[in-house]
Length: 333
Image (cartoon, rainbow, N blue to C red):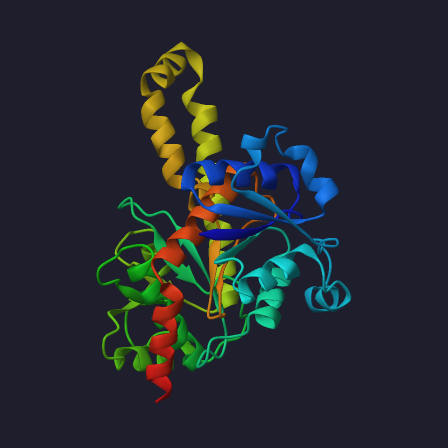
């Protein structure tokens, strides 16, 4: 398996991206195609030949900055690293792409270079969040579509269901619609109409509305919403996890009893951190485009790149792209 990694995207590129790519190669066994400026990448690769096995540098010209307007930047920089990475997937030279940095640019590049799957009106970004049941919940859309129609949310539900089933290994994912109440008639027109459509979807395990308190409960495997709400929820959840970790660290180490307790509970605390740390979930899959594309944080460091490559590997192995193609084809018949 070959995974193309945009080596120039993000706040800490290319150093942390290359470091993460090397670790991902060692931990997953996939071949990594590092896309970017060779002169910028080479210093971070080992000098020994063995260090470079399973790594190939694919030249590109420049990168899309975090503050650049995506569509305009993609048109002006057709050979930018994220564009070349998408081209590798489109041409069959890579099985998937991992992109940090400008999320909008990655999405536009995917749409222009890979295209939408037949039957998909809008792609959606699906992110994993931790739950109290020690299994992740898939939330989508988390930023690709600010305004949605019921038809779009129905497609998100199917794509999320198939991703959860074939990539995450959930046998029959429980799908929920994010809303302000459990009742079918609650919410705005979009929520009410979408609820009705999802209730009529044969084969989709739609279990009803999910309120905000249900997101991290573990009672749902997939929760769908429009990209505006989803992006707010995602960033709040990430900041809440960071805040809980920081407050716990500050309070639990106070005094000699706290320091002793911290030493005794260190293994438990490390497991706690691992469960709530968004870095462990490795980015979000862009569902609905004709290729496997994982978008990760602009602030990504090496560990998150490793996990993003792992998410891409799992999506390829689960053949989620083929599953979505088949479902969308069935819905348009």
